[in-house]
Length: 188
Image 1: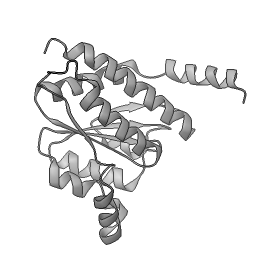
Image 2: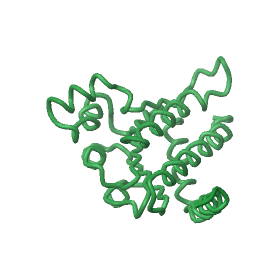
Image 3: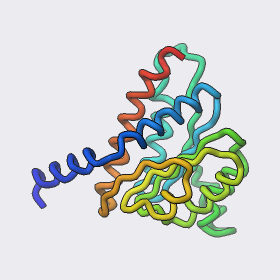
Image 4: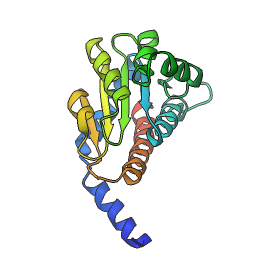
């Protein structure tokens, strides 16, 4: 595929995104900000990189002034390498996110789970626990959304069946969300 065709493909995939899903996701993040709740972000591989970047943008990128006191509290659970490797080694990779949530999360917090396929066992395990513990769950998926789209309370789905393209569109959506959040929290 040449670059022009790829650009057309990406543009058509963007156009097919459910704008209500994205708007609803932004509403949830505004609520997290207003209520001083934590937003935890998880993912594997490229989605782990997106999780780290998105959490950093939520925490720092929504800070509007140097002296701003109120902040959006966000943390990527993909960044705790010593915990992840110890947990994965001792109790299995499926537990690397849920065990961190058990340590840090409280009812009212938010969990953003990013998964291209929507079927990663460690993501599904974390979502199951979060749903049972009054954590608001948001699934960011590609393909048909897999189990994550079915289990998460809220969803943003990039219905495209190629991982690299789904991940880049996730990144684009996350950057748009940060820009919109800046506008929405100005007066709060």
